[in-house]
Image (cartoon, rainbow, N blue to C red; front, side):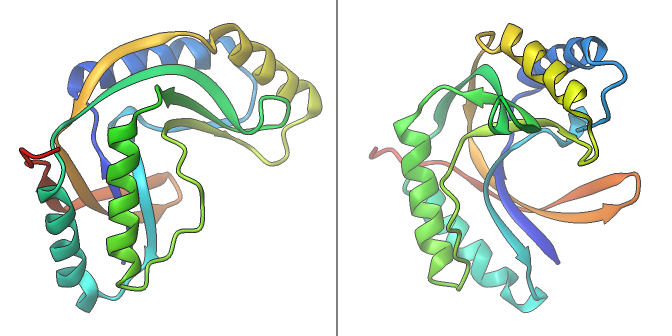
Length: 192
């Protein structure tokens, strides 16, 4: 099973992000971007990859243990950008304001999952992916993306809150991925 761990945004935030993405999509008509469907928006904390079913119990136990040590996390979506850079856009994203509580949760999660053999060497960059440029995009199309994201890079969606961490299964189809929730662990600590 192809798995990842994430936090979900509230319906109100998803509505605002979807409207923002639709405006951006309209301004970039003709640019070959595979836009992420609004019902798939999430904040990935760690991608686990292909996992045998017999590891599910241990993963769920780790998520529950981490969640018990953290309380709900305030979050604010703000700003837009591209990976690997604005000058060489491949992925268009919406960012989150720097958040020490979210960073602590991610570090604890990665440490716990690391003991199960799930190493993630990527530096955590809190973002919500809006779309991916086709690898055959022309330089002119990339320049259009750069220019348009530059215009909206300082926008603010507003505050939200993460109340749980979620284990998702991702099944890839030609029309796009389908995510299924396998486990939810509520953030419930009263200590931090």
